Length: 517
Image 1 (cartoon, rainbow, N blue to C red):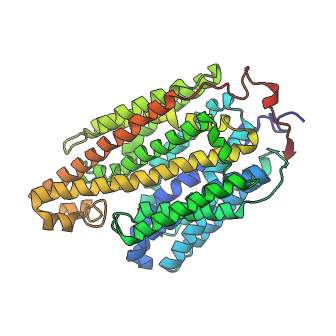
Image 2: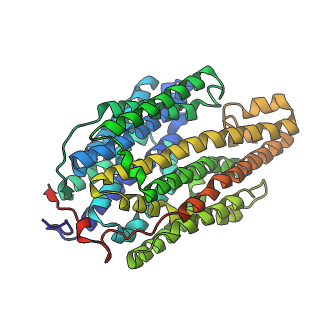
Image 3: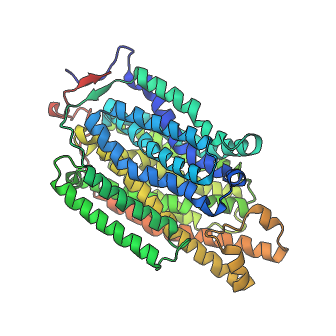
């Protein structure tokens, strides 16, 4: 049978693309909306001392399950596995919405995260099954647009729910959107189905979960709940390292490993995985502190802070559309990660100039440059990763690339959080004394500094806080330049391998598949 390109309803991508985009939107919106509603959640359920676990449980579930969803899709067919992840996410959302205590909510958030881990990976893997890499550039703009919508709409929707509805709707809002995606994909999605021997690597899955859990907890707790040199953090580091070393040993011997180590023998795949890690490290680690800068220094409201990120989203959307069209027309892609890395370095250097008197127009221009760099990188690196492996490993390639970016972001947030806190405390100490600095900057990342608190401070103290937040944010972006500088260097060594689905593709690249209803 020929490789699937059409269904009874015509172009399969156009039929199911709305469902894929809705699933990605779910994955990206959830944490933003829930974060905005957290004060109301704490006010209703109590348990402020467990507040961070509402986020940590979700991140743990997502990070641990991401590689597993990719492998399960390769083994059992991506349609059924993708739909299962959506169902789990929706069940978790409903359970979170009816939680009656903080421990219940934390447990349900972990369950929800398990489903969320398959949403992004599933969408990218399904697209990889339906569209050869040569043609995939045409769809980069739509996925970039979803990221823009999530970044801007998240704070707006979360703010509206917080101000005008019960916090439970921060979770219930997922149900109609997810239900529509589920119905569309269940009825209209038809995917290639590959027949493989199903032998799940349960030991590898367990070791990977333990190792990843250790890494996430280190980056979450280090420097905040526990000192970096504490026995707890050292113990977690030992457990994580031992589990990951054992995982590698098991994967080398198992006939059907969760992550086939052979994919790292491909130079292009290894390089773009490292690029993805650095993009996550530099981007998410640094951009995490932008909302605090916008609200404290520039006076933006929490609800409207997402609108100030529009220049970044616009820049990313513009270059994603342009790069996608060029790749589809020419089949050339090697130069784009190099350009993207160089532009990202320039953007970080510009953002390092943020100060207490930087206007919103200036910061918007800096963020537009950041968006231009991301547009060259985000979807292109995923396309290279998928093109670097056999079709049978498409899910693993997608999940590993996503996992690398997520882990990079987790380490970036932790390390840049430590840099931010140190610089903030130091600058406040110079202006106000160490006692005042301890009082204002405790709690991690300026957690006790918010617009309401700032307005009640005496003018000299308020000025010192604004200057310190601006200086700490600038310092974070300056350090992120170091990680960003490695991106174009690594991308330079990517080889220009012909994309599947183009004129240079050999018939042997086409896989014989059967239709999966």
